[in-house]
Image 1 (cartoon, rainbow, N blue to C red):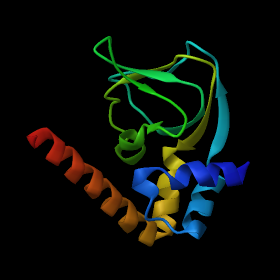
Image 2 (cartoon, rainbow, N blue to C red; image 1 turned 30 degrees about the horizontal axis):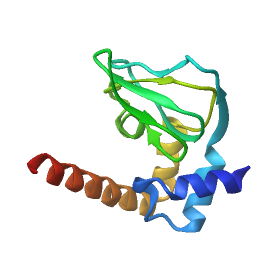
Image 3 (tube, helix red, strand yellow; image 1 turned 90 degrees about the vertical axis):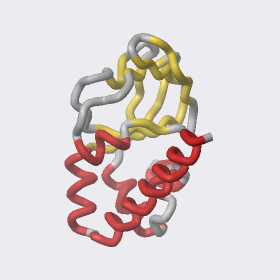
Image 4 (tube, one colour; image 1 turned 120 degrees about the vertical axis):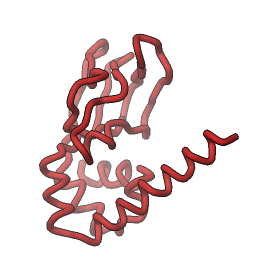
Length: 139
């Protein structure tokens, strides 16, 4: 199971600079969770403390009650709340039965504290995503 986690986590953009060893450390903290269709995984405006990677199934992303995206296997959400514990910027609901890799904020921040090089790589990954987002907003 951990090898499966490793494969999915390695494809998450903010973790792509992590070495295999670092991804293994991250995967050890994660757990596989089954989610029934219709379950709300995050709620817009509430405090978030988890990060999700979808390994099976589909989810809908809603902002102000309007569906803005669909997510399937390999997609992820909750990375901002994982880092800052701030309010969720969207509601995510299971459109089908799902399986997700769940990573908690406390465990993740503890790992970054213990392995500062991972924190630096994460910052670079987030900066890259911000740069891409900024470039798209200008177009």
